[in-house]
Image 1: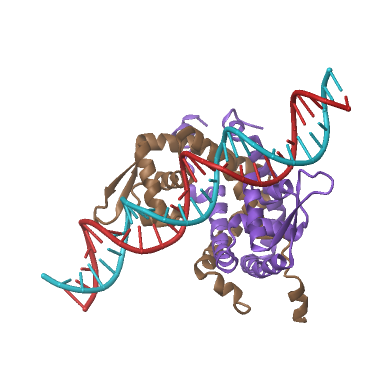
Image 2: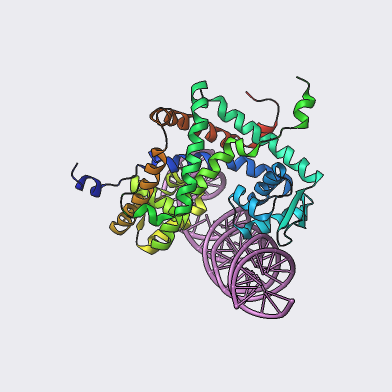
Length: 167
Length: 167
DNA sequence: GATAATTAATTGCAAAACGCAAGCGATTTA
DNA sequence: TAAATCGCTTGCGTTTTGCAATTAATTATC
């Protein structure tokens, strides 16, 4: 293949581009859920994500939360402050290393999480209901691989992508 | 099934929850690309998304751009302003209806798009390379269906999700 | 075992992004 | 032709972000 073909059009066909398609789906899903927890509990996205993390991993520290919720340390710190303010979480110094924060969910926080989770579960059910069994079955491992590869891409940074033909 | 079972634990297992998994992948992919176009062309997310839309659909108006890029009219208007300021696009009144804006990409804008598209294409290639042929084949229709269903969920709003067992 | 270096997390502040009311032509409807 | 509507933009107050600097705790060095 003459390389002029590529030079003429790297031509991302936007509507076919995988990251774009994932983005549109993710954005459409997130919107109604966000409306719900904002109106109902005055939580912002970071607050909700952190709440969800500590609902599953009670007592996590800020670094763990950040990793699980894709938030930088600043956002985590502010998000925790919001949850504490709402009475949804408590923050105490970690047992072993007192530089770390141990963030625990409160009963009120658990209650809020459960109510948001109902909506979240309904969204997931709706989504899965339009897929065939075969699609559902192959989606899981595919997403698992995509998660691993996207994490690699993220940590490697764009320079790796732009320099020579990788791999 | 006694409804107490459900009341006890709607228990979203966060790490298995489809919207969460999609979100993590999308966020990880978006980060390095955003770093690239921010550092290289001083574009923000909205600017890049609009640029990508007009690269494919030259002369689109604000409403079309908004739909394709998941942006509200305010964000579209400001994003266009940013592109015009950078010399990447021009804004003129529409031919038929002069209330609408016709946004065209300039040669400089095309050039910037092509350079960003190279990085974007590399990301996609990387992602697809970790999937088997079978996974790649079933991913496309699955995402198509998920896109349709997520759009429906979005436009219906959260009230539909929380009220009675839907469908 | 004092001191320097590193780490985890937070705070303060300036810059950027956002939400929304109001505005302005252009067009459609009555 | 007057009123209503539409497509888009602007202004402005609020919120969110990004980052430097800070604090407190821990680890490494001599």
